[in-house]
Each structure stands twice: as structure tokens, then as C-alpha cells.
Image (cartoon, rainbow, N blue to C red; front, side, top):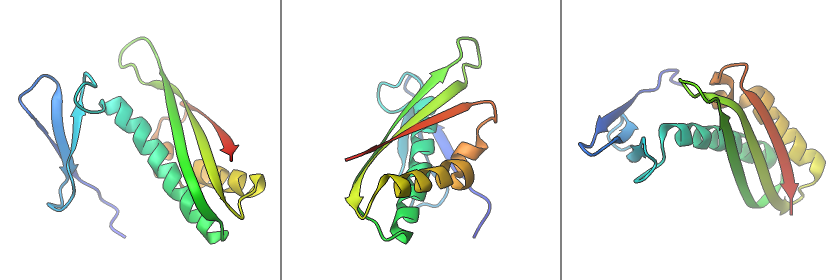
Length: 138
């Protein structure tokens, strides 16, 4: 597996809006907006990345546990410090899961493995960012 990743952003010429994509020409673009008006802000994208990374891990782990996932969503909330650089002080992820063969023990194991071991985005964050999570089964 290639250990290097590259992206490029380009200012659109409008306000704080940028268009970004991976450097592979087939990678779809994403619009980012520092004002969060025409697209997510970079700080929103960080929350999305953490949630997606954990979500990918959880799906893969549950599939290995032979769980059929019927529904899965993650709500991510970040609390920022007041002073620049206004980084996240804490992040909370709420995992909402439904599936055949899914029980609390399997859900907790999958989420714990993701958060504690596998999610590269979460592990890239500063170690003093408090990470909390909840699991809701339906």
C-alpha cells in the first residue's frame, strides 16, 4: 500500500471558497468554504474525516463478525477552544447502528477497535484532543 497521500486545493476566486481533490485526475472534487456557506469548512471536513474513518473501520470489522448492517450513521460534534488557532478541544462521535446479528457487545468491540487502534484520522489528532463516543442500537 502506498504510504504517501497528496491533495491539491485551488482558490475559486470567491470569498474563502476552495476546490480540493486528490492529485489523481479521477478523484472527485470537494468544495470547501471557510465561511461554511457553499461547502463544509476545513474544521467540518476534519469532523467528517474522523467520522468516515471510524465508520469505514466499523463496517469492515462488523462484516468480519458476519453482521449484516441495515443502517449506520455517525453524528460528530467538536468543541473548539476560543483562542487562535481555535483547534478542537474535544470530539464526540455517536454511532447509530442497526443490523442482523448485531448486539451491543459486537458494536462496542467494533467501535473500540476503530477508535483505539485503527482509525488513522483520529490517531493523527493531537493526543490531548478528548475523544468520547456513544453507541445507539436500533
